[in-house]
Amino acid sequence: MLQLLRTVGLRTFSMASETYAAGTHSAAFVTCPNDTVAKDLARGIVQKKLAACVNIIPAITSVYEWQGKIEEDGEVLLMIKTRSSKVAALAEYVRSNHPYEVAEVISLPIEQGNPPYLRWIGEVVPE
Image 1 (cartoon, helix red, strand yellow):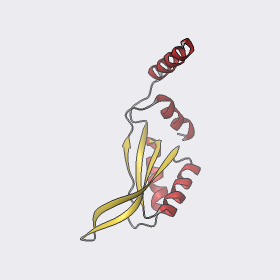
Image 2 (cartoon, one colour):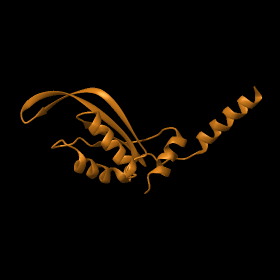
Image 3 (cartoon, helix red, strand yellow):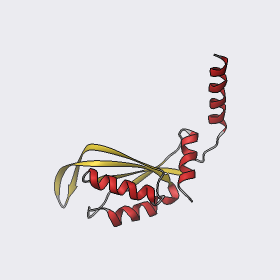
């Protein structure tokens, strides 16, 4: 029991003592027409070190206006964790490799999170 308490205490101290500048990293979102495109983009993004991790979220429904008509399509969502400084390069990669005429690439700054995870993103994705 003492060992468990010591481990929990050390982890809590470690997490509380690490610093993270809010907004250093971002979560970006990209919609894809199918699994094949999503997996190809995700692998390319990670291989090119544009992100540390890409989650592929299947079976979303998007409702949007396109060329004056309301459309509804099944899509796949990519949730991408990267450095904020890499968002422009990430967007360029997606635009160059995505089948949509206007690919969705939006991002939000990460204000806070698990310090070891945030540190890992910084280690994987170079400045």
